[in-house]
Amino acid sequence: MNLPLLELRRQPGRFVVATVVLGFLATLLLFLGGLLDGLYLGSTGAIRAQNADVFVYSESARDSFLRSRITAEQRATVEAAPGVQDVGGLGFVLLGAVIPGETKLADVAVAGYELPPKGVPAPPNEGEGIADSRLQDAGASVGDTLLIGPQRSPITIIGFVDDSSYLLQSTIWVSLSTWRSVQNVNRPDAAVGDTVVQALAVRGTGDLVTSIDAATDGDTKSLTKPEAVLSLPGVKQQKDTFNQIIYSTLAVVLAVVGLFFSLLTLERLGLYGVLKAIGATTRRLFVGVVLQAVVVAVIAFAAGSVLAVLASSVLPSGIPLQLTPARFVSTFIGLLVAAVLGSAISLRRVTKVDPASAIGNAS
Image (cartoon, rainbow, N blue to C red; front, side, top):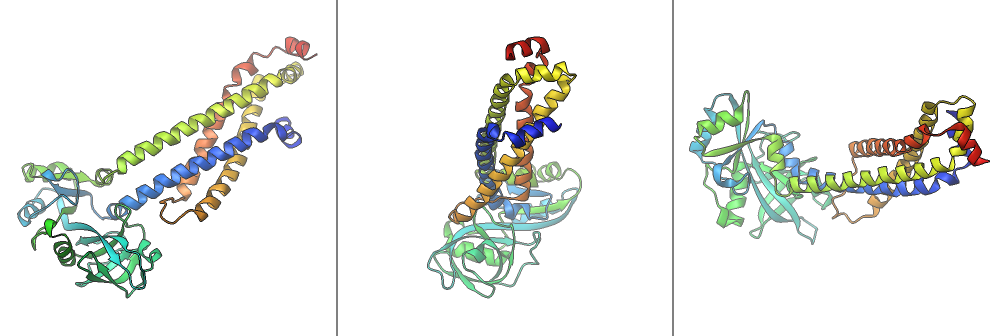
């Protein structure tokens, strides 16, 4: 194992091109992953935070909270369904908000709830709300009274919670009565009655999806939490698109490493012949190639990570880039696997090296 590392240390110029290319590809992978995470986390936080097993929509809503309407009669039927333990109403309305001291409108999602989401206390008093921490970045503080929508409905912020945004808008968690008031005044075309909610968050046991939809005789459609997250507008499409680009980039990494080490193996045929002649096994030679590929990938990933962090710090705040520890880990593993597989392309040439002919050609 000393010979491959010795070559890396004494002839680093041989590996500079591959390291630089892989470094930029690592930066690209982190950026793509960061954009995917930023879009996904920013769009789905309010649903992922829900302490619910199943979400119930009206049958005609096409899995959309904003189009769904659940009546008191439907709720009573859901509450009586087998396996149901807790039921809470949910409602969202997307509006602009005036923050004291700020000239730019902030995009907010006013969310009425009954079952407290993760990190959110019991529903606050009328006209009060707990806001997503993204609203702090927009200039809001505890005690500020925000004016919501074209009718300037007042909501006083009494606290903040992390990772609870909805469709890239900062969520303000309020009681259902406050939500109805804001919705009816600012969106009269979507006004709801005193007992109507958009959807139900349900906790319970067993196959809740089947039991609830059977109990309502198909008048509702129920989704599990993962299904409800992916049903949000654009979430599944964004995830699929970015993942395809990320996998394609990893394929490029594999091709780059494969081409580089194939050319390097051709240059080393004479050296491999000498090593085989003095007893080196094909396995040992190949492990040396893989070791070099791993070292190059690690250095490239470190350089790419630094570039990604530096670039993200100067990007405009409107770009939903979020570099998470999990993304760094997954990118590192993906880069490492691609490098190992790419270096394996040279295996065929290494195994076919004949000591006599290789030494003869070298001489």
